[in-house]
Length: 304
Image (cartoon, rainbow, N blue to C red):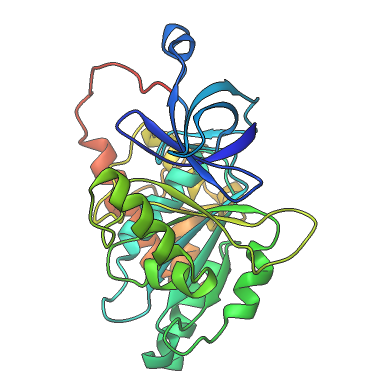
C-alpha cells in the first residue's frame, strides 16, 4: 500500500494512505543498513501488520524530489515564513537568517505577516518596502479576522509548503483555519505517542482537503524557533543572499567589495539614497560581523 509520511517520532512513522487511514509504522532494517532515514514528506510503500491496530512497516521509500536539512523534510515545493506584524514585533534579523537558510537550500520563499487587523498601514508598508523590493513575495493576513486567506490559498494550492516561524505568531491557528481537522488529527496522534498536542516538537504534514485541485495541497508544520545559527555560509558569500545588492555591485570600485568599509561602494551609496532598505543592510552588517568572528566548528556532517 502506498502512502505519505506525515509525522515521525522516536522511530515510529505515521503514514497517511489514500483511504484516509493513518498507519503507525516502523522502518525495515534495510534502511538502517543503507544509512537511509525516512522523513516527513516521503512517499512510501508499507506492508500492513495489523489492520485493527493500524500498524505496519515501511518497506520502500520512493525517489525524493528534494531533501531539506533544517528542518529535515522531503518533497517540498516552497517555504512560507510566518511572522506577526505586531505582538510580538517581528525580528528582522531572525527573518533574514531564515531567508538565507532557505536560499542555501534553493527553495522559493513566501513571507507572510499575520495580525494585519491590529497593525497600522505604515507598519505594513515598511515591511512591504523592505522585502518586496528584494524580490520576495509578501502577504499580509489576519487569522483572527480571516483576512487575506483567499490570496494565501492561491499561493498554497497544489503544492507542499513547509511553514516555519517563531512561537506565538499564529502558526497553529493558521493551520487550524485552513484545515479544521488538524486539531483532531494532532490530538489522535498525541494519544498514541503520549504527548501534548499544543506544542509542535516535530515536523508534521497536513493535507488540506478543502483546497481542491489537480494536485494535493499539503502544509508542513514545523517547531517554532527563537534563534537560527547560520551554518555553512562563507563570509564572502553572504552578500549573495541579499539580491537587492546585485544591481549596484558592478559600480563598486573594488571587485569582491564586502559593502562594509570600502571606499566608493555603490551599495552603501544606494543605501544613502534609500534604494536599499536600512533594516536589511543593518542585518547584513550584523551577520557579516558574526561570520567574521565565527570560530571554525569541527564535527560530523549532517546526514539524511
